[in-house]
Length: 119
Image (cartoon, rainbow, N blue to C red; front, side, top):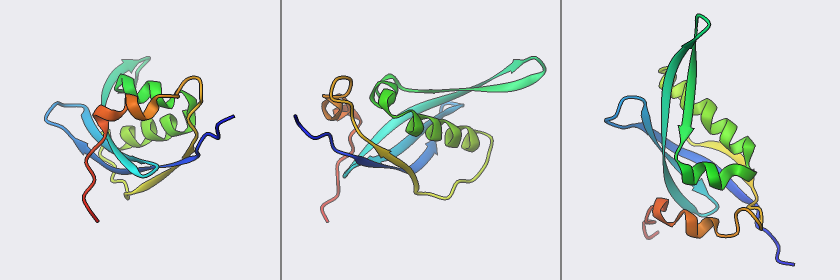
């Protein structure tokens, strides 16, 4: 049986886009850096404002097996959307791709991968 790697995940940067309520996140997963788009919409519910935070489909699918990562990202995106400053980078913990659900995660994220500068 093939050993599944344990990958460290870090939030390197979060930037607002020209679209109100939209952000670009730059995550380091293992040794690669990926870019994901998130949106935040505020809706009134029972006299309170509720934030609806959505990551793009490929992020949500990849981290189905990493709810701790998804939860931490949503919390940080919500904080940034309300004007809080976040000290970056943020270590989000470790993630291990599930052999059944995430067997092609690296391929699935190919469009999100950023080129690495030669060191």
